Image 1 (tube, rainbow, N blue to C red):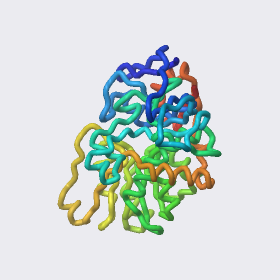
Image 2: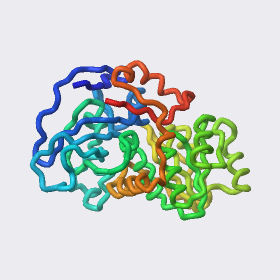
Image 3: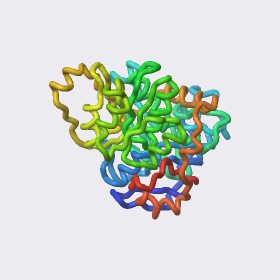
Image 4: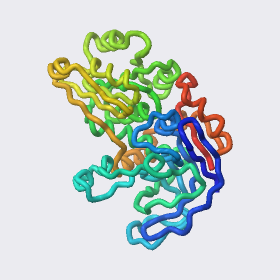
Length: 340
């Protein structure tokens, strides 16, 4: 079968590998139909991804078709031929986080495409309980459910109230997902980015009027937009150390800062300023099954339209040469879809 392997930073290879065998107990063999290219994949290609080792088969944003199901009593609703998205977070079920229902930050977390080989291949075996059937959703949109869930989870973590003003820093796919669920929650959204193309995307498709050019004194722009005040909820979805350090200065007194992205390094802040604002600092990691349910419900109800997000579709052969060009934000790409 065709398999795309990230051998080391900067080196992708299209290989022929043996297909998996039959699924075991509580497993399903699935045919990979679509793979969304995520910022995690780009960071891994660049050599800047946390929790990562090489070589690795990338791919955790998956739309799949069920081919075979092993002996199981877990999921009577899943049958051969179903199209599903995949919850790529393999949690242990017994650590302190799992026991408290926080399976998204399991102590022993294994994420497909990060800690273990993912879905950039024609077939893969996954735990049957990680399949989520979603009827009447196109394959291209189904592959992006996981991406939406990361934004949904971040908004759920911060819990901004309707009418509150939130600043979303970084209008890449994850930042856009945060914008989407903040808007669905009745929040007033301001977006900050260094890309004119991405800011224009927010204006056109989210009707976000207040956008901030990150290249030109963003703090002054933000205070002007908010009539001298600052947002009470700030989300940083950049994974950029410079942006994440600056984000502390954008939070109103009594407000919160949620880091949706991460980088391999230390985050530091000026403690007196942090303390006098009584700021709440949050991390948001992965998503829960409830976030998947929320995202799928919004798609099925037509509350989210992912069609404008998909910039292009590529084949396994095309991705090898094209992948390095996607690291440049100036391209304005929102989402690339790999089609097997």
